[in-house]
Image 1 (cartoon, rainbow, N blue to C red):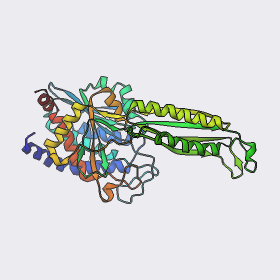
Image 2 (cartoon, rainbow, N blue to C red):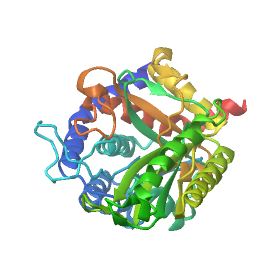
Image 3 (spheres, one colour):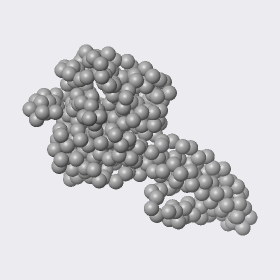
Image 4 (tube, rainbow, N blue to C red):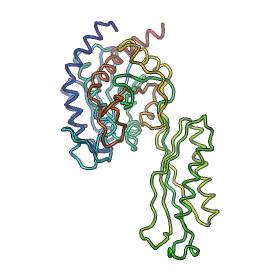
Length: 399
């Protein structure tokens, strides 16, 4: 893309910045949980329709897809997520959450605003070659909204040659964009364990099979699974919830444990699941209790395809300069349901720096987090450049 064209695009998107900021703050003030994003979806659909795009709502409940088409050429999907988290916000700025116990603590408000800004710009100019589908997805946080959209025929109704996603990344310099091929985010599984013992009076533990003591041993043993796993393979098991008893003087009949398992490679995922089952049943049987393990595969690993990652890296270099590309950011052990889309189509998921200092460096899922408005134009520019240049990049790669 010629430098002059890039500068003109940046200038115009800077003019849209105030609107993106207003959309973002409105969404932040009214956070909505998975599959409940009615206010957000209404705002998204209104902006897209006013831009003159073809819009469909109600996909997987609250999902929205808009389409821009201009002659023959490839079709791509650009995806943003819309849901918030069940977290009490502790910020005091004007656009803080107005809903107790709900908060945009992962930046989905910013992701939505950036893609809306890009859609408005592209609809105004209509210089793309081919087709762009703007995908506004519900329920990224734990509920698999991407999978739900796919199951409702997303890619049959809106065929694409490739699909692309973006997430803000606190701790990385604002505006830098991290692009790599291969794994970007880990797979995410969850488990629930019921330890069934025999309760009784706390003064007579010898007459019981104490599930609390067994749970304590099991928690330690679960951590040993990872500590004695291949150290060259990424793996995390975290016990995050323990429920046991209601009184000081009663040893309960049962204890419930819950947590998550994360890995990059499917084979490691399989081994961790098998060892969790074996460790749990072995310890409980040895100590006279029984156990039930409910293990659920939630999200697969988010894996970028080589071709699309290379194209996106080239795009960042040519649009923003070599200094703005980060190609050595390690894969995160967090998870992302954009992985389901990448299982269906080639594509690339990038991370955009939210900032490394002050408020912008506050980590995701923190009650003090806020998306950095200064990167709205950068993110929208990336989306616009990708939509405008995808066909050209594919042709250049072929030559």
